[in-house]
Image 1: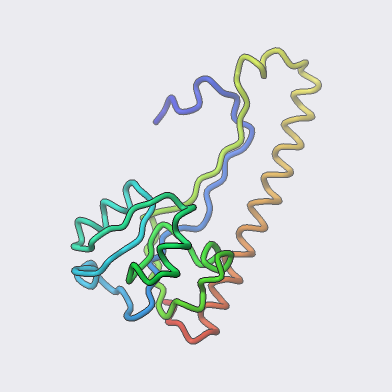
Image 2: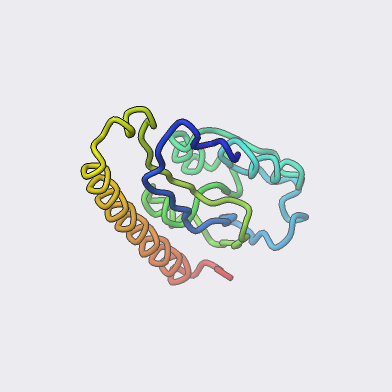
Length: 162
């Protein structure tokens, strides 16, 4: 949406690594492999993609994902990546990961109300901008390292990771 940030002053924008379908029993190598499976996904485009591929989709907010995955309710997980599953202590439930670039990716933005921003002195705006850029780049770097490490752990555990 080209007007997404029209009422705010954008201080930082970052897109994380994306596109994984993770599974416990068998790898997902094509959309045909999703037919008849139960799949977890955040609501939205990925959930719709899974439905159109023939999966039965359990779509819920991320805060419900641990309960859904750990209970064995679903066969595959999308919208969650290896780092998220490592944080949820769920990497041990996975045997297969299929990377699908472009299907999903977390997007984070940091912004302020434009009216408030415009009331701040230019010197202070420069300081805020510099601090925001620094902190956002540190967080993005930590995420990148965490994702790479989680994918290595997944592969080292015997899981198939293309």
